[in-house]
Length: 96
Image (cartoon, rainbow, N blue to C red):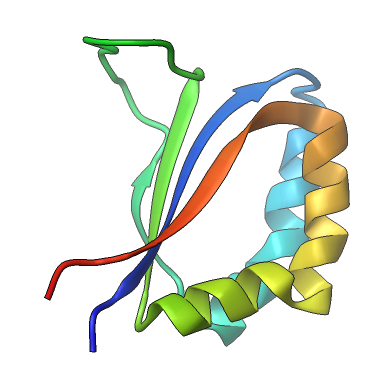
């Protein structure tokens, strides 16, 4: 079964509040077995537009990735994230 991934491009607009998002999201990520492959870090945007922070999270399947996103715990965190940043999250199925 292919793995599932969250790919997020984020611009933090309220840096003082963003750590609250990270702490609130942590239990959901632990419950669904999330593995952070990319979490911030230096980057070079070589084409198009990009946020200031990039995150790639691996899950055992796309179904688990979706379940994590839609979980009650993550949705609490999402409300905090929406007030502290702008960006996109895409959930994709990995290649076999």
